Image (cartoon, rainbow, N blue to C red; front, side, top):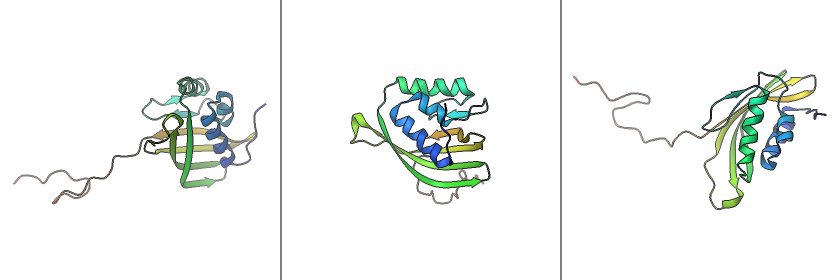
Length: 148
């Protein structure tokens, strides 16, 4: 029997608990039971559908990485039966608690259905590189000035 999540936040909490616990069944209970779900893990190809999303998490959990995750909410959009949460995921590797990798930026999308809120998209990626100081004579997004 699947859990009925009353809010998108309840689903998100369960998703990240499952991630920390490396619990595949708990992870998949947060996802919608449709074929239009999608997941993009950092530096990996997008996967779509129940079987592919399940296998991508199973592969990650088999790697044996022991992590804690701190979530910092950046922006929420919740209207009607759709919720979009943009978060920073700070992974803390329990094997090396002294070193924290840069936070990941993630977009989590949820949909409300007859059995409550479920995740339909998780997209996590590394942060952009640090901003470089401006080059004199070049505006943002501009290349070098043309030669005359």
